[in-house]
Every structure is written in C-alpha cells, then in structure tokens.
Image 1: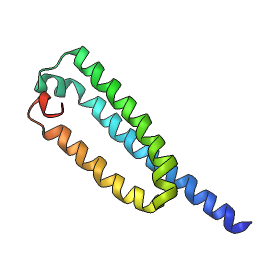
Image 2: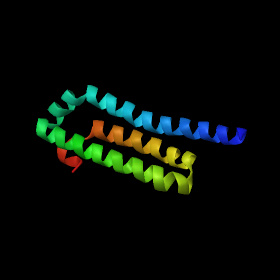
Image 3: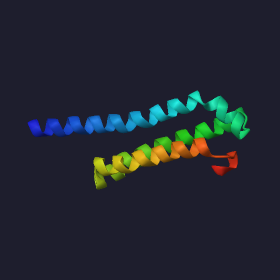
Image 4: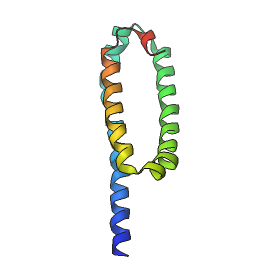
Length: 103
C-alpha cells in the first residue's frame, strides 16, 4: 500500500510538471504577442486562427501522450523527449523570419 501511494504521488507530480511547463511557455508567448504580430506582419484574425490551431493540437497531444505514449513508454521517456521539443519550438517561433515559415 505504501509503495502504491509513492507511485501515485510521483505520477501526479510528473503530470503536474508536464502540464505546467507548456502553459508557462504559452504565458510567455502572450507577453511578446504584439511584437510578433508586428514582426511577422499578421493581423488579429491570423493570430486567432493560430491560437485556435494551437488549442486543438494541445488537446490532441495531451490525449495521445496520456493515453498512448505514457502507458507504453513511461513518463520519464516521454518527458525527456517533450522538454527539448517544447524548447526548440519556442526558439523556432522567436527566430522565424516570416509568417509563412509555419504554414
């Protein structure tokens, strides 16, 4: 029983970390949104479509990770792959020179 509680607490902490880190990154994006809109020459409708697409893929990726990848490969491997991907995508969005680079 004690071992099960330990596993449950570790799994809960891992899920909190994997949920919180991407949302911190998203929060940082909202601080630089006006700068990116000017730099990429996009208007509010393009931004809203981008946020909608991001939200759809966020929900899909959470479902795929939680229901397929974590049970199959384990939390540690999935988190080890997810953090560099999120960091690289953040860097890519800041250094892109054009709006059409993403589409």
